Length: 430
Image 1 (cartoon, rainbow, N blue to C red):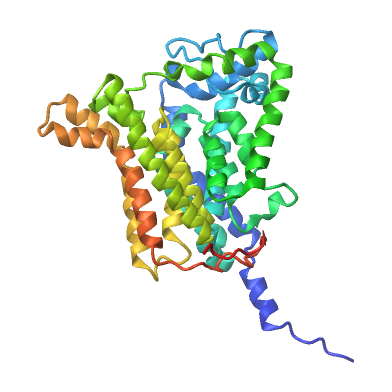
Image 2 (image 1 turned 135 degrees about the vertical axis):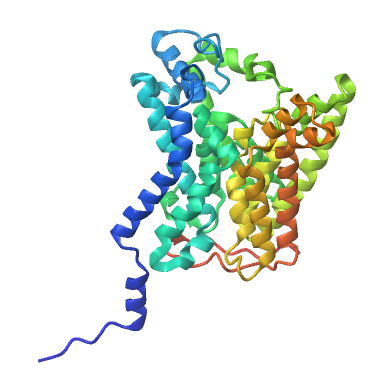
């Protein structure tokens, strides 16, 4: 009788490192419980006339198509009276939302946002998370919960926003090694589709050009153009209305000078100067941020730090855009994990930097500034700084990303992680 050989130590270690189903179940429970403060506040105790107002607009666009109503003329119900601001392709994708009751859509959309944010943590923090072995699901859950409490993320849940899905799509498309889920899908396709839904991800095409990834840039542009042209055939009048007028009207987005607009332009609209001088100053500052930002993103690309690369481009897009509401800064989730890196305990700079950024965005500093100013507490300047703090914090985050990576050499830490497809390695540019 032959006695079977005992499993090798490598096989036993692999088995020990494979999370059990009950650990995944426990991790899901942790995320569910951790999300309750945000979910209860914005879906249970929030005023009904302010409930899920943005997903209501998406749903309204889908309804408009079904009933033959012009998409860009319709307004959501009072007191919001919000118009549709996304391209026709987004309206077509919103048709399923029109087939269910609005109350159900609000809860489903929130669950999907939580799932998408968990996916962002998974893909942005995988260098750190995969170190946990069999406890991987619990670490994923523990890292996800505070991300749900960040001001931009919780605001996205409050309004029923689409930003979590845009960030996840771009992160999956650019991250190296490429996720196995995207096996066979060319790089650039998800960025192109995201751009056809909400235009701002198109800034990644500029980044592709800066890094001389011509084929990927062409793929992204081709994907966006293809679905946009298809949408034009399906909705010719609405397409003409959007591309011929609605797109160039920033007033459709709401009061650009309000506190919620944390872009450079939004800050300048609040603190001056106004008129042509303000526009010129905005163009200069936005140009400087764009040049330095794309330089930093290119550096991250050459360092093979794709998580930091995505974080930089996303934050630059928010800063230079004419309008960037607080919930648009969902990119900060990616930035926090880019700052943490694979082992923040060995590099305390990373731990401090990520902690400082997390603390800034956990607090609702812009609204603290509004309260400070409205109560006339001196000095008013401090209140103004708080009011515009998300813009300052985004710039600080870019500086910190440069700081923690300034001495970094090209890394091979991305190769060979479980469940990932490793792409061809590159040499740094000379």
